[in-house]
Length: 226
Image (cartoon, rainbow, N blue to C red):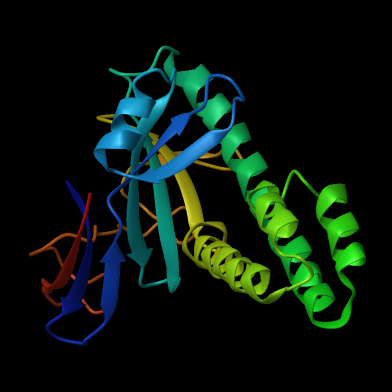
């Protein structure tokens, strides 16, 4: 069973959330999958040649989120350098795809408000790589956009949450037990330090220090999944 944990600083009341997620490379598409650490995702990751954990933290000096993709070398089939390069390329492609899909989804939302169904139908088919989950909804809609708008809003909310959590954060690649962090630009620097300001970072776990004020972090809420 996995969980999302909300931490609160006892000194400055800052809130941080740890999502307890994993990543793995889809061996068929070479695309990165980011999933909650539930049993189904763990089982699916077993056939992947590249797997690892995602760690969220924060640099109080830069006032920015930090997302660390930590490769598990014991469950991956590539060497360290190859793993880092493959993961770097896959993350960049995934981030670009999410940003492009978000832009198209906002265009589609405007169309659902102002356009007739045939124009919406054509737009979805032309952009089917972004909207595979809406094809069935489109066929069943019978000209009624209400259900499709509801589902599209859920997609947009999910992507905006992803963009805020990952794309807009400082993204780092590391290897479990390795001594270095690697930026998306390929720079290598000492582990446990922010790539921008080089200050030492803390991690979002209970009894760890708050990355903003140095106060004590305590669990405020925990949501169990699966």
